[in-house]
Length: 383
Ligand SMILES: Nc1ncnc2c1ncn2[C@@H]1O[C@H](COP(=O)(O)OP(=O)(O)OP(=O)(O)O)[C@@H](O)[C@H]1O
Ligand SMILES: [Mg+2]
Image (cartoon, rainbow, N blue to C red; front, side, top):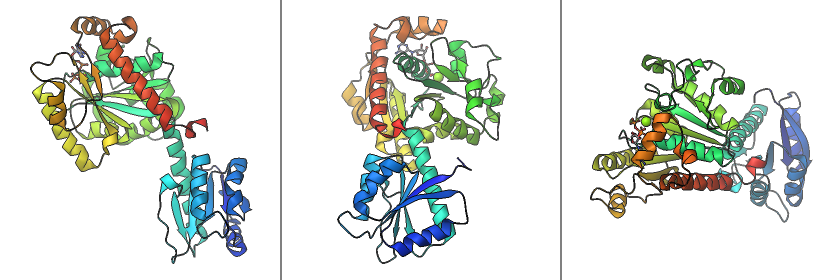
């Protein structure tokens, strides 16, 4: 991103302010003013025509269309474009990206203020745009053995079969559950083979394991002690690159709420909390829910998957929902015979036995996530 010239459009009806901006930007080459539009009525049309990276809009535009309406109109028509609202201290405006106001620039401002805010808005919008075309989903449970690895692999394959570009990430850093499941050779590259300082797209593409099922897998290290070589920063960087390359990044994690798991949870759009009809799994989820609340994860970031949903063992669904204080979003039935055979061969049951009820459950989850991605990325993904 650094080094690219930012294309700026200015919507400003006070000639002195516009020429002040031109003068401030004259001595630099990072930001280029494409044009100054002097009427709010023409602003949205000009944005569609010029395709700027960032637009500066005067909050106090005179005429029929107000600055707020311009900002909102730009957000609706061209959601990938960043908007900076320029205003005076007497007319405070609040930042509200949902209404098209990504940042505020108060008069009087210096050249440094102007370039800094334009660059920051551009960078934040670029990250948003790349995120909108992808979805990161992490399987989580504080209780082990509930089916995270099995579900993560099969969901990833189901999404891949539906035509999505998918990368499955082995977030079980010490014991690499996916290596165990897929029996990849110990020499298969892993996260530790990513360069530590500057990870690039090509590095991630080289390191991802190409599974015969058609999906790519970023494996955890082959040995327990090597997990320590993977830092939180490396993981964050790798994930942000994966989101640019794949539509779905699906993560399997170990049973814990520790730093190495939180790095995946923080970066996720959706946390799929897996539970079974088991009092310890239910209790674990209640406790994790409190921790997520304290961290500040919005409820929309969380969903629940009831695995082995037909093995109630004295519970029923309503009891579980009451205990965890939220609805169960997805159900996958039990099929010990099929799962064991498929896992022992390292093949996904969703493609080996697509008509089995367990496969249908996973496919329904995949279809729902697929619909979610389409909704999230209406216009941004076009870019
Ligand atoms: N729906 C299911 N029906 C039958 N067996 C299942 C189902 N889901 C998972 N299993 C079995 O349960 C066991 C645990 O599954 P899995 O390893 O996927 O869970 P996990 O949550 O990843 O466990 P761990 O804590 O070891 O990481 C495995 O033997 C798997 O075959
Ligand atoms: Mg596992």
